[in-house]
Image (cartoon, rainbow, N blue to C red; front, side, top):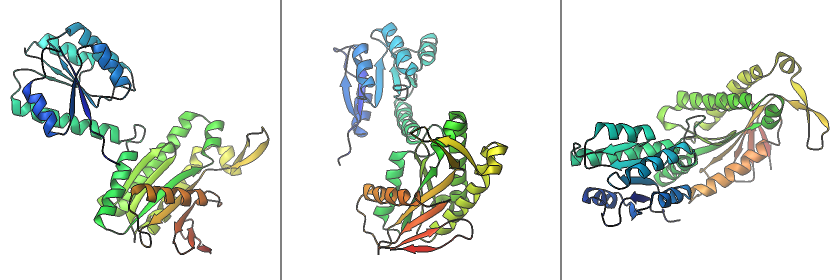
Length: 329
């Protein structure tokens, strides 16, 4: 699938083209540059996901520009789009006003051209970093997960992709609160991060797909001890998130979709593991699809487990620190 070219929406007068420095910088970074005189049109395009960056010429319709920046930054769906103000005067009061409205960068004549390019490069880096992490856990999101899998595929190294998912999480949320649920997700993110980084250092990777779904990546030889340690730490910490009564009982009563009461066990963790030991993957999507399948199978088993695809018709199932081993055809 071809990479989609990112677009700069340049808000300025139609008879005043963007400065040469901006045009050359955009071209060097393979960024498209569209000029739109009307701030309202720019706002509409950003809301529709058209622009990756917004540049605004302060010389045209200053008041409308300030209002546009404020509106974009007030909406969570558009606030992530960086806004750069271009001005031909160094007016401290005006610059403060732009920043107070939410502008990410203001470039004035006092800024050397080389420094302007450096600032714009840094803006791109910050933007990519901000959208690449999940806001609640600050772990890399789906784009970075795909990139890391592709990096390992292209590098020809032996690796394991592990898909971790909570069991009985929805019932926990329903009994307690979304606040408690968010805390559990954060705890899981720290367990995954600390174990993977603690055992593997920079060779390990942990990402957050969303909700209670996580991906971590290890070398082929490391996934078993990493998964075993994660399950051990998880099973130690998770009971502490329940009330004393539920923790002692080991379950609570919840309602199913038909409104019938049933016992809900304490949360467990299911991990599906896929390796490239016997598979020849050509795209991260193939890895993701098989990891999802293995995770779904793991969720059918009791307790906290990790299940490893062996391709030859076998699956290895382990749980707990000492673990149990089983083979299923």
